[in-house]
Length: 99
Image (tube, rainbow, N blue to C red; front, side, top):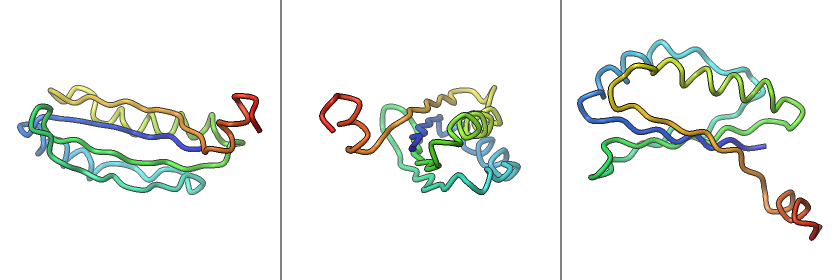
């Protein structure tokens, strides 16, 4: 399974984001992370995307661990994030009754 994490923050909050990121605990070994990849957005400050991949049997544990990692940034002005569960083409086709 895949969870896509999107985050954004203002340039003024970047120093605090960096300080808190240094305190981030590693996720469980069964979660493979790609990213975060960061890029500037003229209208919304700094944006980041990370992809978390894990086995379906660990979905509940993974969801909790990933969400808790974002809680580290709670209270930073302008910080926003979203987590979206995604699946591959084969699983999506099966859910639609086409596989």
